[in-house]
Amino acid sequence: MTERKAQLAANLAKVEERITAACKAAGREREEVTLIVVTKTYPASDVRILSELGVRHVAENRDQDAAPKAAECSDLPLSWHFVGQLQTNKVRSVVGYAHVVQSVDRPKLVTALSKEAVRAEREVGCLIQVALDAEEGGRGERGGVGVAGIEELADLVADSPGLRLDGLMTVAPLTGPFAGREQAAFERLMDLSTVLRSAHPAANMVSAGMSSDLEQAVAAGATHVRVGTAVLGVRPRLG
Image 1: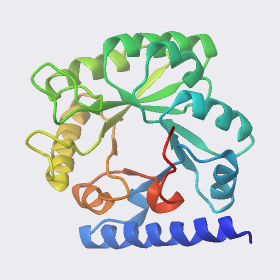
Image 2 (image 1 turned 30 degrees about the vertical axis):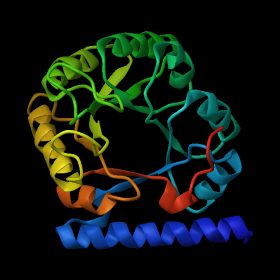
Image 3 (image 1 turned 180 degrees about the vertical axis):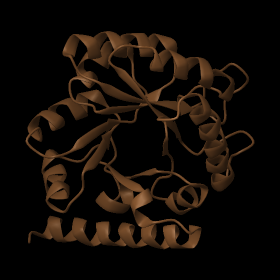
């Protein structure tokens, strides 16, 4: 086993222990929570090692990094999640490899995703990114639609060819009423998921929690956690 593989295996084991303990504390089964490893800024060689270690879901937030990496790893049994703010001029590229786009936050993006999914003859899963720091009718500091905009956007995704409404995603906000209150933020997202599922029963995915707050996300009921640093290490600074 190479040094890097041993390092990633040890980190994965620690994260697995954390998720298992969080599930136990919350009275949940370990199988209820899916780990997505966020591989942004790390090379395709790390993605390949992660696949060898049993990882099946990886996430990226910049198309210029993700597209070549996904192409290089196209032989691996992986689901690729796009989690960054997505500009419409990058949609065609992203639809080429992403199985799920977790950052859907405006109608224009839904329209672009639908057009490219149909063109590529693919079905792309979509999560509505919820901004819990957004002003009424506004968007969040790190993208996302305000709570009042969820229903309209969800209906639009559900009615768009080539797209599948999978659920909701959030990032713990740094400002606003939920700043520093990660568990409360994730519990709010779960409440919003309950409302969404009353209209769209299959949209049961709830993506929340990262390296620093995955326990709070699991306690709240998240179905997917997005972990980068705890698995891959502290990211190199981008120039």
